[in-house]
Length: 234
Image (cartoon, rainbow, N blue to C red):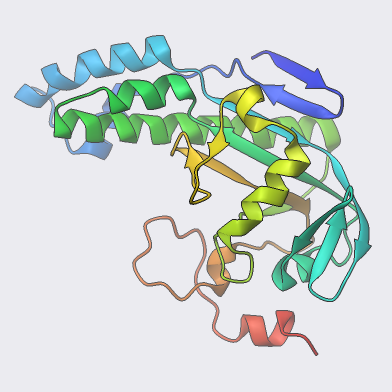
């Protein structure tokens, strides 16, 4: 895996990507020996040839803390939950990770609806690989210890509009790893994730404050009363 340093920004743009075809078939509910296998195999070959998952991040420092916001390198991040989570923190790591424009373009070019869905699942796998390498690089380079992460749009307290200042902190993700914001502030490629990773003594996931039922992305149980007991302004 090759990494580049752009001032204080770390760019991971040669992340290796391999696929366990048996695990993929299990995920897609494709049975061995079925006619679907012959439709899936060429997609896997294409994806492995094209895939270039990427990530970028930097170390940033908190300049000041307000009641419901923090100022990081001159840029205000407004969120009461983020502010409380950063109470004892001075450095943090804004980041973006993506499956890569190569896989996004490839998946969007597939006409067959089922195969396009398979392509999207492969892209999701590539994104997870990018996130894994990002987290590993942060740990190896900066040794922050236990960390948690928050992403714009994951809570009403830190809405998707926070993508703008987050991208400002990172410089130019479009130029660097091909990730840009749409007019509605969604990321392109769609299989991308952005956020702030920060040291913490206790694990935190936005899911703990989100009551949404049956969320496929849930990483932690909803904890009723947590916001009122820990995050509500006194």
